[in-house]
Image 1 (spheres, rainbow, N blue to C red):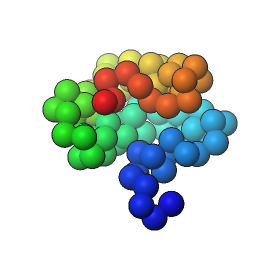
Image 2: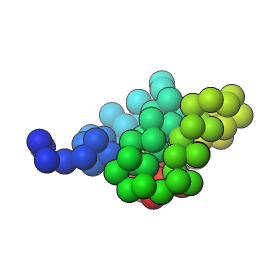
Image 3: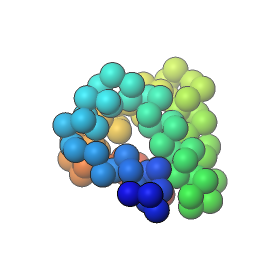
Amino acid sequence: MANNSLTESYEALPKIVKIVLQLILGGVIGGIYRIVRFVENKNVVTLVVGLLTLCTGVGNAVAWIVDLVTEITSNRITVLAD
């Protein structure tokens, strides 16, 4: 696990743990996940969405719901997180 990226480490968590984390800290986790994903992949859209998720209330609420649904359906954060 030493050579995995941070996002791969998060994705390797059991599904129930990720769902509980999303329920409790969903907006914050989604924003941080996207910013770390930007550092790994250099996709500017991912950075912008991550910052908007962390800094705006509406972005935080929308990302929280979308990320929770994608965690349940596909077991990872997928929307605007390339």
